[in-house]
Image (cartoon, rainbow, N blue to C red; front, side, top):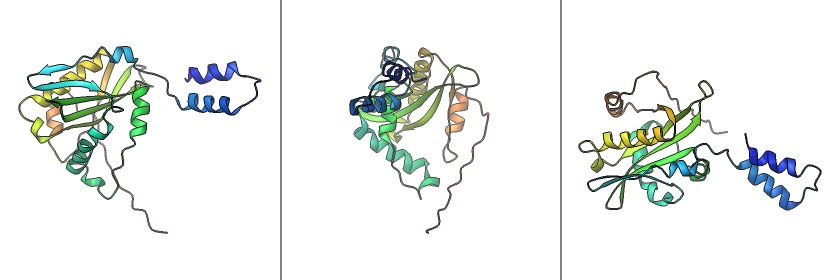
Length: 203
């Protein structure tokens, strides 16, 4: 429920709809209810693993820097979509992030961005508990050595626990071995998903 919008409307019942009030209403209507509080997200501290750093960062602050990871991920695993354009809606990512509903985890080595994991947060309509839905998980080939990926996923899981998340849902592509990797980390195969790209006829 958008309590800010409700409060604004209640406070202005019977008032003349000025341009300033209309603008305030539009801004409030577009604002999402905060799910994870910023003070709670701030409790997720960076983890140092030798030359690697796992951390939570704001996509709002590194939008340009992360675009090359999104392109590399798209090229490697999204072949079934390559007739569609890659055009991420960063404004929507930022909007969800500001509402505590989108978290971006990163891997860096000496400042260089090597990987990321983005999670959407929501409250389940079935259990009323917090759930996390993986939007993307991608590591550059140079960050796939040894146990880096395993340690990174554990870092993300611990951060989710800190925020009160009880369930994590992920998707894996059939073009790689990610499914086996996640099973080894305790994830269960509970459903199958299918995709179809619809052809649009020229009119």
